[in-house]
Amino acid sequence: MNEPHPNLWHPYSQMRNLDYVPKAKATLGSKITLENNKILIDGTASWWTACHGYNHPKIIKAMKEQIDQMPHIMFGGLTHNPAEDLAKKITNILPTTFEHVFFVDSGSVAVEVSMKMAIQYWVNNKVYTKRKFLSFKNGYHGDTLGAMSVCDPSEGMHTLFKGYLPEQINTELPINKVKKEAFKSTLLNNKHEIAAIILEPLVQCAGGFKFHSRETLKFIDDLAKENNILIIADEIATGFGRTGSMFAFDQSKIIPDIICLGKALTGGTISLAAVVATSKIYDAFLSNNDDDALMHGPTYMANPLACSAANTSIDLFRTEPRLEQVKNIEKVLEDKLKECKNMKSVIDVRVKGALGVIQVKKMHNLNWLRKKFVEDGVWIRPFLDVIYIMPSFTISNAEITKLTKSIINIIPEWECKI
Image (cartoon, rainbow, N blue to C red):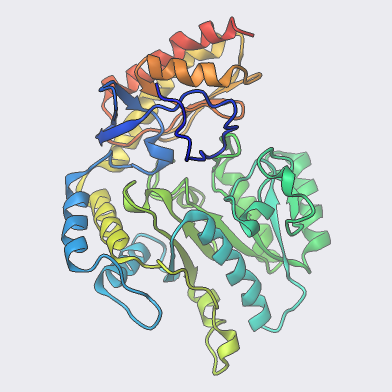
């Protein structure tokens, strides 16, 4: 174990209490090799990005070829084949209504751009009252200013910024009759000022891995369309096969107006994200007035190196059996994790696609728990009130079993430390 480097500031960490930081030196498949040569089975796919496993040879090959030719070029006033190819591939795997791709450099920025698109869509259509967003409890959409404003306002990471963040409309997901009526009332009472509803389809990931049904999504979508409100689907964490379909919203048959993509887009190699819009949205920005244009342009947008990785990553979903692998992971997780249901500290065990969640009554001794998993040869990073597995799709059954066995063995010991 290493203590934190004196010049580094780690994310989501109280540095005074951070007494160990494992140092990685290599990755391959579902394995992380530490500096001391200890090997960990990765249960998080590097914050859910490495869907094809680490160091997939085809992605690495494409990036090596691209870096020699053109690692970066500004996208303002220029274009290039990697970006054009990627835009085509993204629109080809989405419903035909999605025809326009705006590239950015991270998931949070994708959310920011989607929000700007939604606001300006209404402005360009001469509707000036729609300036707010409706979002949901337990939702998480990123750490930048606009993205934070549509996260759960009571969630610990962002409560510090109350009074600084734009105030949005935040409500419960309409998962039952009572909450449907409450949601409908909230929407109808505020529809004149709601530019868009932003949601994570089927799974609210970083807000605690709360699941909801395709019927819930359809209810939200139907009500939005009836009241002339846009839908932004944040598929940054749920997209690219994680929930069992290429995109989570596919399972509900809804058609959002704007989609945010990121994380697994490049197969866990380099940062890239995208905002994909329907022609309805795009056409609202077309006019003879320059002020109607979308005024946003990250310096590294459509980075050719990142686009080359993403192009290959999308190809791998066609040439290798990723969605079948997700189904297998789902079966293994359902079988193995059910043993946790009877543990005294566990509230719920839930599985969807390549995601397994153990929700506990109270998270405690978090540093001890994380360190214990490393000692046991796995990289599992509990947070909030969940211990979860969200691995690469190429993980072997033996490696999944190692992850689940570690959880099953360590939770009872952890329970005794309360």
